[in-house]
Length: 407
Image (tube, rainbow, N blue to C red; front, side, top):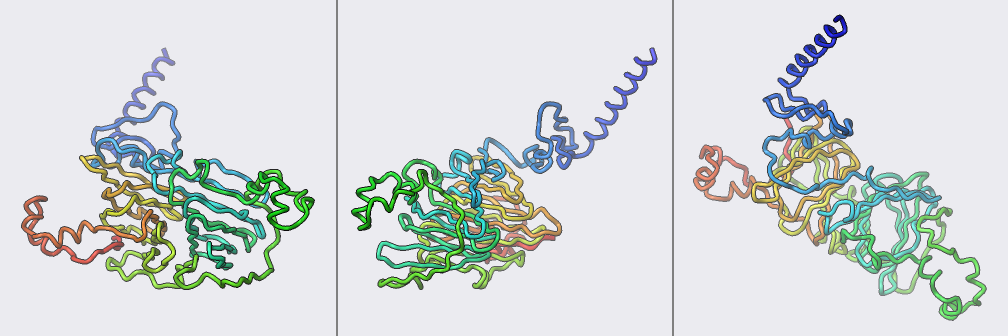
């Protein structure tokens, strides 16, 4: 009887506690309970830490609606490939099927390590965020470029241009992007070691004018990333160096950020208007202050691919026909917002910046501001459609705000 009484008491306590819990939103605790009568605890298998980090997947935004495909991928879910000189992990279309335009990777090189000489059927874009690297490249006219890059520096190699990257500091890391989501299909990347290993030795000897024995120690498989020592040799050539509008590099932080209203952070634009060689990849480097907002907007020319480098944020993506979904983001996450989909990005932290990179398969960065559109439409039309006070519409800002200060 005492055991039965204890069990009844525990059951009553559990029910009472559950009733209290359901009176308050529990999304921050990883439970799909809105505190207004909807939802219930999760009793089945789940990853509680991921639930806590993604409250909007639990139904936190009541304005979400319809079916929106997954638009987010964590680099932490990518398979890491390890090499003696570093590592690489990718996000390709097989990971994030909605990312048709862009594939990406994070790569780490130790000091002296080389991402072997290679070229691609697609363009390659890189952003250094740790350490320093040496890039070397040659174009079809025999012009060359050998440059040291550090934090914030960018490279862009047009399709078919051969290149290599070497680490200079003890540890070096960078983001790579390519203008084709299906980056791992055959015929996309051509590694030098792989090609030479599969060419007859007699042909190699004839091509280079040396004995066949010269190639006795060729690697049996392409090394991809290999240990080496930092290059100390200079390059010269009769056709000169790639510079000016032909340069493959752009030093982001040596330029002033865009002059934008809003006061919510810093916004660097890097596209063919200021980096002429970059004709198929346009990018922005964004730092959004705590509680700030990348204003409601859409991009008329391409999908938007994103890499979140630091901080925490969220975005609601509207894909039309009443379909909208909110996603939570943190460092190492990637995302893709469909072509012309409406969205914003909000820094959800009260004390830390949110830093990310936007990439478009385009020659320029372009966006349409919701506020600017409404402000440049007859105010009575907007007022009638959205049932907003006429004076509020008349006072809308006619300049893009881009990054709005938080409060």
